[in-house]
Length: 292
Image 1: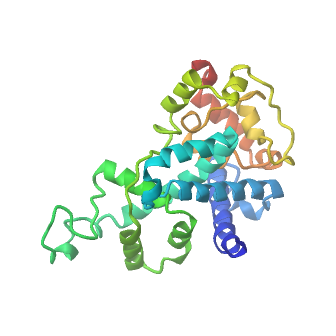
Image 2: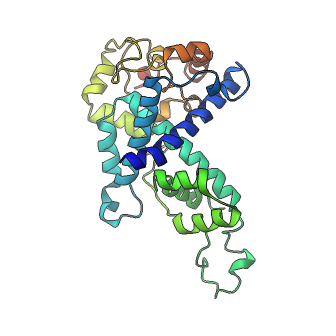
Image 3: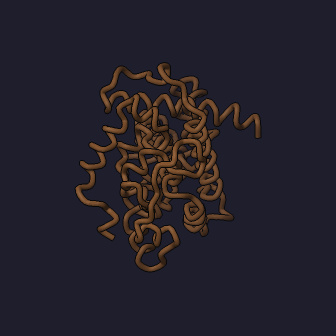
């Protein structure tokens, strides 16, 4: 466990934090990328990042597209995991998931032609519909399912892709070995994180959290020292009351700069509090909970 943390979790958490802070610096226009050098992560920020990554890896274990034993229960497993998380914790997990997904989107763009069925490197095969080792990534469905499948391979593959790939040939062979199609789906448009799933749950099988949302139960910012308390950004978005919405209801742009990870002091010093207000107002002119 210690080796896994030091070799996989810690370097990826540092890389991911740098990536989000670079994005924040760009969209908040508070200075050049590389903001992490100016302010080290706080203990609470490290905790949020770390638990998001461990939960991401757990998600990959219970939704592994390669494991035939769990193939029929993958969606139920994902829903069971989300049921034990607070909505802002789901957003932490989904933020890191989307980061990994974006990395694989770029990788598949880089190896697209190398793996294309019409690439001359497959000319010596007898030309079945798709040569062995080739993938038709021009097909949007195949591409999205391949991205989901790669993302669900977990932290070790992501670590290899980001830090250990030696050259383009190594990248191509790594993708050939690991591309697996998966469709749960896990995105903000459909499936367990989409609008339809959340609306139907709210109507047909409301949870205690849905009832807290309906009652607009108070949920003020209690500071950054409590591990189970929401970050400042979450309480600003929902006016200090409870919300059980996530995924579809939060913009990808906000997740890219890590709104759900930062302490109040970081939000203020980086101009993220004002950025959050602008982006949230642009996304929703009315409270999305009222649409339920």
